[in-house]
Image (tube, rainbow, N blue to C red; front, top):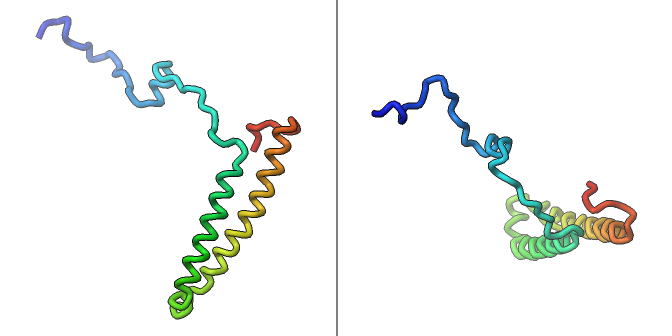
Length: 107
């Protein structure tokens, strides 16, 4: 091997992990805005998912009753109800953001 190809033993190795690359400025994060600032579509999807889960649990209610797991029915009812509370919160929050009363990046 030629002398120009040898790396001195005292030279520190360059770390290649993403954190080190970010610290050296080799990786740049792009400014990415969230897709949904309001949260309303996400909460509506959750409410629908709990409604579907309720129907599925109703279909298997007799099996769940035999196994002592009929409480699952009430879990779906609670999820559905809390989803409506979440929807109310998201709508009020989004209205306040649109009116300029609070920043979109808060909470």
